[in-house]
Length: 282
Image: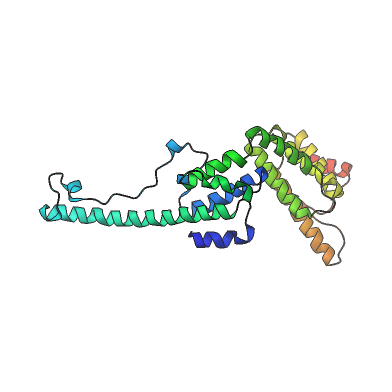
């Protein structure tokens, strides 16, 4: 993917690095752009500088590479000349790739400066490479592991209550993001089946019938020692339920809808007694 294509994809979703809470998304966009030009390996701020591959121009092969005893092209025999020509073709391709990568790195540096708060501009003057800039910014802005865990734990606690005015779809996307971020740092709040249960209880104020059904469903699955759906699955089930309910309301039909799990349709929510009876038949 070219830098122009990368810029087109991201133009309408620019992330500005204005504080620690922006770091993960901002560095994610930088990585996306760098991956598009195959230069991330040269600038990854999580890698020690001595472990980075060096980005430098390839050396043009000389006659002595083919034959150490000869220093001019005319001194080579026919076979050696052909070998040197082949090496120089390889060099030409390598040098063009190097020039392309150099252009991409310069473009990235410009992008970085244009997407950070003025408070952090001074950090972009440190060092000579994009890697130096990213390391400097990471040290200044990126939250520490402990701070990240505390912040994510707070975010997760907030997600356990459905919003009253916020768009539900936006809330669902935030649930997925916060959960994934918590998993990355191995927060105990998202161990095992806890997130699924937390989500089902969280949607109660927005969709009491759906929540009540899935509370019972999860209890019965647990009692029968069957696996519970993953958080990704249960969110998608709820998302589909909301869409179907919205479509039905738009057509002025009744409020019945279907939820599904393991490809079994549920046309309407049952009472606890009926649900228990059906679970015993499964």
